[in-house]
Amino acid sequence: MKTVPDSGLTRQEFLKLAAGLFSGLGISSAAETDPAGKAPDPAYLERGLTAMARAQTWFDAHWGAGILAGYYLCRDHPLSAETASGIRRQMDTVIEVRAEQFQPIPDGDADNQRIDDIPKALLPAMKGGLRAHGHAVIFASLSTRALRDAPHMARPGIIDALCGLSRQIAKLKPQRPQPTTEGYTGTQAMIDATFESLARFQPLLGHAEVRRPNFTHMITHTEALMNLEQMGFGDLARAGHLGHRVHISAPVPEVPHSTAEAWRATMEKVMSGAFWSDTANTSLWKEKWNQTTNPNGDWIASGHLFKVLYSHHRLLSRVQDAERAKLCTAILLERYINPAVQGG
Image (cartoon, rainbow, N blue to C red; front, top):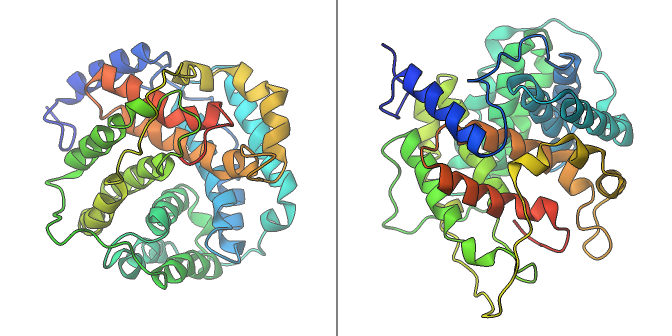
């Protein structure tokens, strides 16, 4: 019987575990329900890849990458009709607000053989440590997955532009790992280390005044490396382990001794239709981010909210401790529920 890579579980045992874990978190899992026929329009793949390819800087690739993540979030999980509709509405809002970046690229001949050029362009961006919070890996992993599902978009101009994102990031100065830092024994060890690291920050729950480390990209970077391995780029994924170590080694900030009541940042709440249709959220998400007046602006919903939910859902199926999964979910999502929380 086949086993799930790095887990030591048979596929049957894994699906049973995933079903129980996701049920405990208040969400459905693909292990329980067949989502066939509920997938969003594959045109979102074309739009996401287009916006990434049109990005003038690597940061501008967030908007297209967010659309790709939103597509897979809806496609791969049997969400309620209300939730899926709410996510798609927000994806459409992103496309509307950033209309110029989503303008179609003229048709051309696709070259499927060049899709793998995108992950192969990653090495310089990973060499020596962590750059740009792992965005080279995040963008390359997600766009490669999307191109495999939409190979007609593998046009030379699009491939060159996507490779160019990694070349931009490679020019940045890396955060270097400690001299004694080593990689992981495998992908599962990397995932376990990520959730162990995130759990350390439990004392911050409810203390909105304490700035968080970069939890969002701890999660999206981890999933991106996992996805590279799943797509057949195991050596490349392992090359990113040392940089990943830098990401999860952030110290826990000093926390006030005063008591605080944590916001109920549950997966059930964030994956509800009410969350995505709440005008208090959608009105802020549509406007540009501003540190003072709109800390939950388009930084959240135009890129990071889609990507963090997509990545976290994928990683949860590899976490065997349901209580730790619930804790890490609360720590991760508090930033998205409570606008007063900065960082994360």
